[in-house]
Image 1 (cartoon, rainbow, N blue to C red):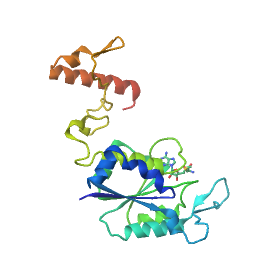
Image 2: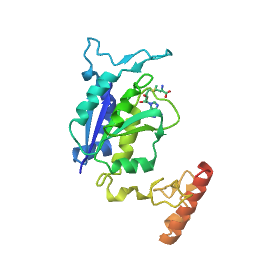
Image 3: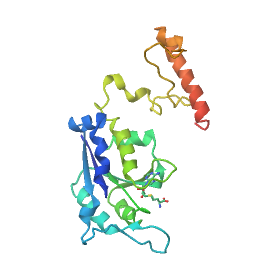
Image 4: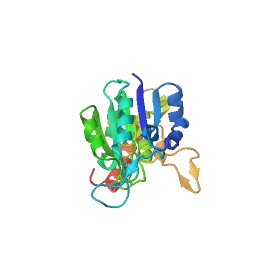
Length: 233
Ligand code: SAM
């Protein structure tokens, strides 16, 4: 089944990079479908208002629930099987390769991009009863909006879909791929031609043609790198 991704945002143009390169080709070849919806099309006042002041006081504005309710109802009314509604938020669970793999198995992802101080909390609460809701963070920092997080998640998910990467670019050796042994989560260094560049030589083992030695060299490089950079892994 073709993966359908709906993104709801106040900045639809923010998603245009997805027309480029690998993801653009994947879309053109029908390997996944992307539908971007403007949240402001679900407002009914002259100013197309989507935000308001926070109850309880404090700085910034919060996104009102009504446009979100209307937009999400419309997307869910399509009746796609088992939708997952993803709310990008710094307070969500970490987005990992394992979560990307999980999302790549689904048939309908809906990404609700917040702005300002975020979306009125009743929206996620309401949809929890109607669909699977996941609040997801792409890292411990704060972005201005969920669109960049949506781009990150879509790219990580779509490259895992069958047919998106050519045979020569399998995702199975990548850092964090499910098959990697514990302690070797990070992929080691890669080299290409020329064999000598600015006085630096490609490691001799990689030119040896000895696949067993190359495999064990790569494993060791990966172990050292993972230990250095992810001591907790
Ligand atoms: N007040 C929120 C907080 O402190 O948790 C931050 C809101 S942020 C300025 C606006 C929007 O950007 C959020 O609603 C979310 O959609 C998105 N966002 C910001 N940082 C993010 C992150 N690390 N991961 C995913 N989404 C993020």
